[in-house]
Amino acid sequence: MDSFYPSVEKREDTSLNDKPVIVTIGPNEGRGVVTSCSYEARKYGVKSGMALQIARKLCPNAIYLPANFELYRETSERIMHILEQFTEQFEKVSIDEAYLDISNVIIDYKDAKKIALKIKKVIKSKEKITCSIGIAPNKIVAKIASGFNKPNGLTIVSPKDIKKFLEPLSVKKLPGIGKKTEVELKKLGIITIKDIADSSKVLLVEKFGKNGVWMWDAANGIDESPVEERGYRKSISTQRTLLEDIDEWNKIVNSFSPLIEEVLQRADEESYDFRTLGIMLTFDNFKKVTREKTLHLTKKSQSIIEEYVKQLLEEFRPEHRKIRRIGLKISNLMHKEKNRLLLDDYM
DNA sequence: TCTGGGGTCCTAGGACCC
DNA sequence: TCTGGGGTCCTAGGACCC
Image (cartoon, rainbow, N blue to C red; front, side):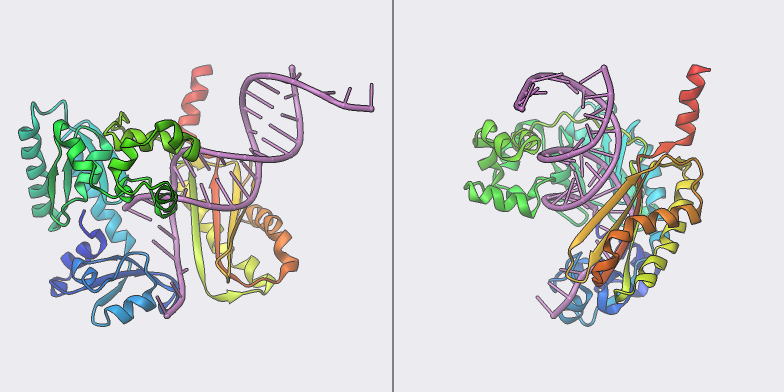
């Protein structure tokens, strides 16, 4: 979807049309960030992830709205449902992205284009928002293509065009290559995707491990990963930036209570049991630490988990360091339904 | 001008077992 | 007195994505 959150907001309130809309997240004005912004706002240099204080300077006249995730999730579910109608091989990637393998539904790229146009039309008429689509022989190229001509784009890369399409692009365009890897590649004189494709795979593997393998493959247009539904989730977590940095021990400990409640409730709603409990702390200098412990508990009530969180926190108590953000995570999840089915096999 | 919140995957060291 | 090789699980940190 194109600038998904602001687009949904614009649909809900048509007076926002053509205006720069910035969707924000965070505990308050001073500590918030931009989570997504409309194309009008991007013209001013506003980007997602940017501190709200900076965005305010760049684009004081924008409409600033706190994120309404309920609304975005509902909209997302309806859109995903539309997409599922087009093919059996469907993979939801995030709240506003999905892969569709339509090779069984079409005979050529002309056909594929027709389907893409149909998808755009249906979403536009039912949900009043636009999307961008990439069509290609594999997921990586399709993804890059989908971002090629945003918003409301449609980019088709047929097998014979892959090399020509990829080669001039910056390495950063490959999903999986971020800031750090971009810098490391630059040290090797590698700037474009062609540079990766032309370099030695052995060297890339030496330097980047497993990452080097798919990097070279992707740069050469090779990606065999199937389009398939993601299985059970691996973790459930929540984080909160505090209204102000605190070093008072009791306050820190107590601030975990609502997070514990929330995570336990989500686990329950989705029928997950867990074995590993973890905490995350961000200090006032943005240094982060995580601590986790694999438990062998049958009962996991609020008060029991509170005790374990306290234990995980204990080592930081003498430090009196100011804390900015706290987080809680459960992992090593076991789906109760799946578990039951597995047990049934033995019965 | 100063930094959110929800995830996944990878790496590397250490404990432990045979 | 000193020493292998293979495997699994746990833990912490970091890169990356949206």
